[in-house]
Image (cartoon, rainbow, N blue to C red):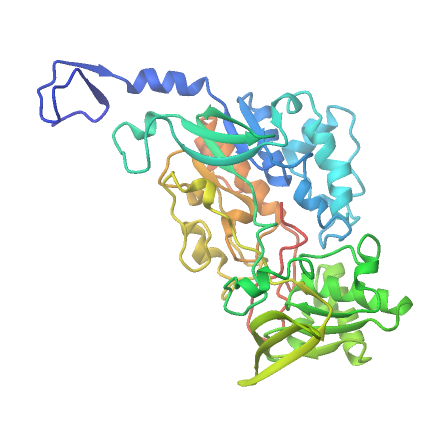
Length: 461
């Protein structure tokens, strides 16, 4: 039987006899050991991976397309997280920071996204063990295996990864022994349509449709003041948006707020309220409950959007309400909070297994399916569950959960702790579970019906 770890040299055709063989496995492994681990994405999870690698003396490089670390987080920097500081700082990162006289923020305080970046991610990125190995303003175009394509199997595991990048119009490549994809899903939103399909009419409205949580009370105040605004979505992101619009309406009383969602009853969106062990999250449900009772927000539910298009009267939203066709006309602005999905484009030339339903790492799907689990019932997991068919390639953080909105930052920290332990040769540590999660109580926003996922907009990387 042919040894697949041997490379045929001077073969005369595919069936030629071996004239000389060169064992490349040990040579390649030695070369691989000199290469860095490449981390893609400088958010909380990517930086935690860097901290763990640095603490174990492993070579790494951290690549991000933003101009600074935590760029995605800053897009929702005005939003306050549900969980206090004690659950938002990785333990190893904290240890490295404290060696530089960094002071941990108040453990019980709830940070905003901006505070998370300024008080944690930026100090962490500036540590001498991490800063030299960060490449910002650098977009990863694709990831593959050196000198081969996705179809080739011979000696594949012994080949390094090749990462193609673009920065200011200049294209470069770098090699890595392992890749940790921590690019998240934020910035790759779902459309407003209930089918999940992007239609050209909706795409053409990019100047009047905002995907995410706009800074309504400051930066975007003039955009929404005294306008007729529709908010699409039934999770915590939508509630945060609605509460800000209601605050804006106190000053600009001509502001009209319409809440569109697919839930059968608006009450299903209130969550656990006072029963929620995460007090800040519970208060969101109570506040929106009061605003609905006071009729300050018009609720349209259950409503399944078929089409969003521009008309002479403004934006028209066409859909089905109680199985009958219905249309909302004359809308000035639309804010879409329907979640995000992973962009797998950069991984098209490596071998990965993605669940067909959740678009998560395949092995995670039964653990995180929002039809079954909420963020408080997801079982801890690590390197073993996150392995891909492509050896030493890992998808972590919110991206590992695909479209499932049950991701928690602390879960991502445990993912990279386990992976880095494995890559460092500490298999025993990689197989241990060291996850410390808050007692989340009523995690689901759908408290009054069956369990479903909590919105991840305030905990994504």
